[in-house]
Image (cartoon, rainbow, N blue to C red; front, top):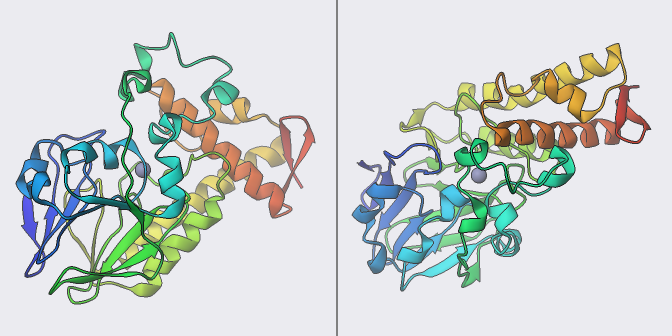
Length: 296
Ligand SMILES: [Zn+2]
């Protein structure tokens, strides 16, 4: 569904669910689209007639149909320009073997929630960069690039001042979020990025994975940010009771209530690792022997 949010500004809500995502169309003198994951709905933006395609970040559900934008310039944050070249990063399975103690090969039936990365041989084209604070002028519509790291290191959100609207990508405001399982990223970065949006205080926000407009989004954003801190408190509580490994903590499902697919268990572990790295840095936890953590 295409929802008009300004004279030239439209949100493309996807109707295909998991591994797809919402997009933005600026149907102006310069035709700009943000992300390419809208599945069947993407035809409505006429990808072949788009001048600039911007990706919020490198994950598959945001770049999956970049190839349809045959004559567009493809722009990403400089960090994402590197990440998009790694299939493990695109599929959010970087470091699988280290945390899961086995190769992803041979796990097929359970990993179907994530499309088989080894069947994707795509080379995603990159033509240029976007950077924090940059203003993109499409004619009558202008918008600002906000570098909002945490979900991925180069993740960007976009602010449309005339409409007082922000497109937040994977600051997704879904019930299962936020996700910050990229290898060795600090969950504190995501907290700071969400705080930046709260301070900006747009009248409305749209995200990649909820099919509605959030008006007066401050309470929803605060609650979403606080989930990160609540997860961290649950981890600390465990570490106060006894020294534990990532595997032991993961079995307690402190982040996801269920692990219906192996990737969810992997993401639980990768986010635990990132929390533990942050807790050690903050002096709230220590590694007492290799891979075993306790509260300080
Ligand atoms: Zn993502």
